[in-house]
Length: 463
Image (cartoon, rainbow, N blue to C red; front, side, top):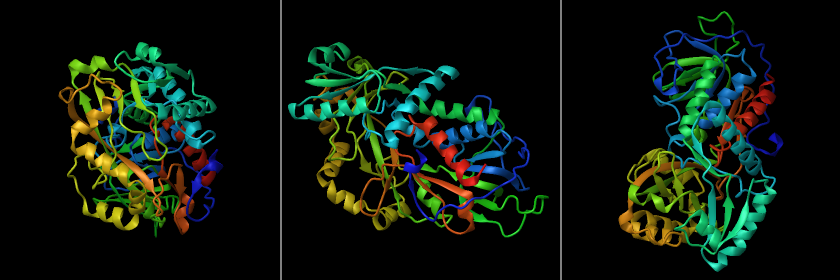
């Protein structure tokens, strides 16, 4: 499976480390979000770790958990730039546990999603995390969509998705009384969960196994040390120096980065190519007013159009009882730009100069214009939603939250849909693994992805 991944940069050499016993700094301030775990603050003396993971989102935390469970003798730390964990992509997604129907048969995405969904359900059952297996209907509302729907159904069967059925109008009404459609795929295995709760549970598992979490540590530089730390008796056993924006530093033997929206910039710190570039796409959601939530019971999705890069606006129930409608897909002018007018000059210049966005936009011009139009005018979105549930009116909806998707884009304007590992150049490439792209559905697949990442860590670093 690992061989199917896309690799960048020079071939990674082997680094053999004779790992010592646990070398963990004392716990610092309490970290209430993790239900009993504690985070660690850096001190005036340099902290030493065997492995450091940069990025406290669901992929980074799942990987940290998997790594320490497989190698409990290692000292491992997670670095997160925010004061809390899992607040960006993990904390702003739709919460859907995807079934794996959409992805190319035999692809890594398809395999990891099907495996990952089963593992997420199993994990939630073990930990007592609430979820709802509410199912999903993928609904054809026009005759021309039916061949695409049938092809999607065949793809789902090839991917091993559980319980799929093609249903007609009368059965659509039984599942979703207010939904109209000619034919639909019934995906009973699809569910919903609060992924931030899952991610924080991963963090708690990691800490209870002896791992350390350092929040408010925004990585500014990763480099090979020129000399051993003055407090260390181990010489150059910890040759990598990670510095933050406050001038603090830690030392370690190996680094794994899972930096999400900043994965390209963090990768460049070790000499990696800027390609693929992260281009942020904001997805705005609408909310169905509470008194109208009876109109939707489970997930309702449109039939995807392969000409366009995103799935389209859909109906998504949430664990808190709300119904989200969306998302659209519009360019964000800031990597963490959750509001329409959020702007960052560097982010915009990177998009214009370094990415293939111009080519992508030219290839999908009408789609992009339509997304911008729907983002500006609620009536246009409501008209689209009424194809599925005619009873919805503009008075039934409110503007809701937004998320930002870290879309990797190559210079030819192609969306990078597979996982990308990289190392960099020079001596550091033997000691670092960048997870440069973990595409949707990364949350659903997070446990399966983490096992793949740990396999790659073991192979590269010869643990």
